[in-house]
Amino acid sequence: MLKDILVTSTNEVDVVVKEDTLTVSHEHKKEEDNNYFCSSFSKAWTLPNDVDVEKITAEYNQGVFNVSIPRVQPVEPEVKKIKVK
Image 1 (cartoon, rainbow, N blue to C red):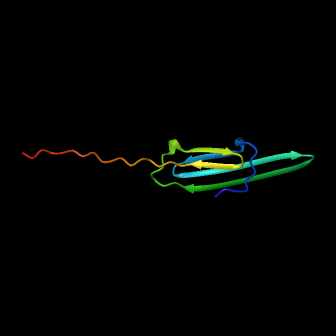
Image 2 (cartoon, rainbow, N blue to C red; image 1 turned 180 degrees about the horizontal axis):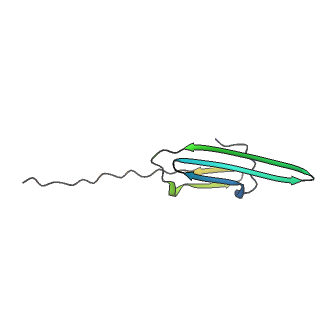
Image 3 (cartoon, rainbow, N blue to C red; image 1 turned 180 degrees about the vertical axis):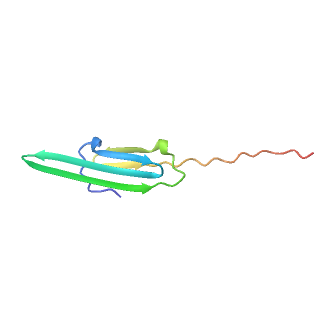
């Protein structure tokens, strides 16, 4: 679960899949009145084998960050009938 992440722009969040690992990271830097503020976060998950990596999506809407990780639809094995001679 990801919560309490200060995100002011979707450009501050990176979602990366490398091999079987999904990583969500965030970095926020701000300088104001000679004060410097920086926050960062990184979380990684190992993905199962049946994930459709090409269809992973991420969205940020009104303070809620959502990553959708669809699974590959199982393929039914082809059945071939063999004629007995």
